[in-house]
Length: 91
Image (cartoon, rainbow, N blue to C red; front, side):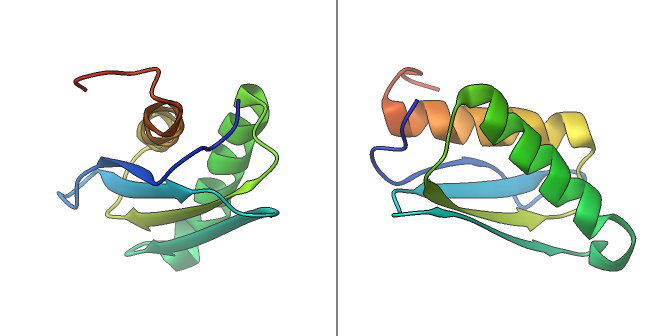
């Protein structure tokens, strides 16, 4: 997969996260979180693992976390990437 255009998934509600993706020359992940000290590394790892599973090697990914579980982070990242590929329609 390739990130072809800007896309996003998620909300800024409690226990969720907002994920933005856009094309870039290399892979960059930026995380901001209300629980950054405790779980920032886990959020970044969940993001990088999901990107690896999807075969993403380039792109800018920005995550604004409000206490989401790993499964939520992974789902939001995958949804944003698929939206950028236009594989998920009307989602």
